[in-house]
Amino acid sequence: MQKKLIALGIGLKAQEHVIEVYGKEFFQNLVSDFSNLKTNIELFQKYQIDFYEEVFERYPELFICIPDELEKRLQKIIIEIGSEYQTALKEDLSILEQL
Image (cartoon, rainbow, N blue to C red):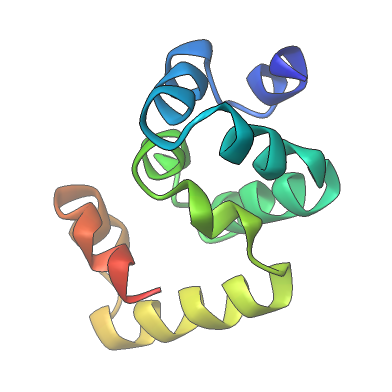
């Protein structure tokens, strides 16, 4: 599974961080629905949030969401922040706590 995540842009360091902070059981639950996980990563890419690995480390629970729900949440934040949402998110990931 680790190799599949690396192929999606989630490095070993990020994976190990999630295991260390949230526990191995949480991580296993996170990756058990690989299809949702992959789709959610693709949503971050779709909205050109290229620092999704950092998001994965800090807010891995976002990647468990049902993709349609995550997309609605992302769209809401993008509308609230405006065209500079990528810069704003990169500078302050805590904005994602609203999700």
